[in-house]
Image: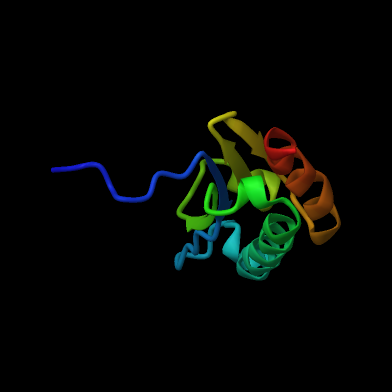
Length: 102
């Protein structure tokens, strides 16, 4: 085992868990589209703030344990979890992520 070549300082995780048994999950609520929008928003900010380039990773993830509270997004290393996230919440969450690089 070895450390990966690239180490990210910030992770923004978007739950895209899809339960095939019909139980409530983030995928049913449009989380994949939200993930894509987050990715684009972070990329745009990284262009504007060079100190953030190659330091933030937006990733899809499995269940974060909050499916009943709507689409869940988590930010690490801050360990901040947000539930019931919608497209109009993206600018506020992106601002929280970018604060450490400004």
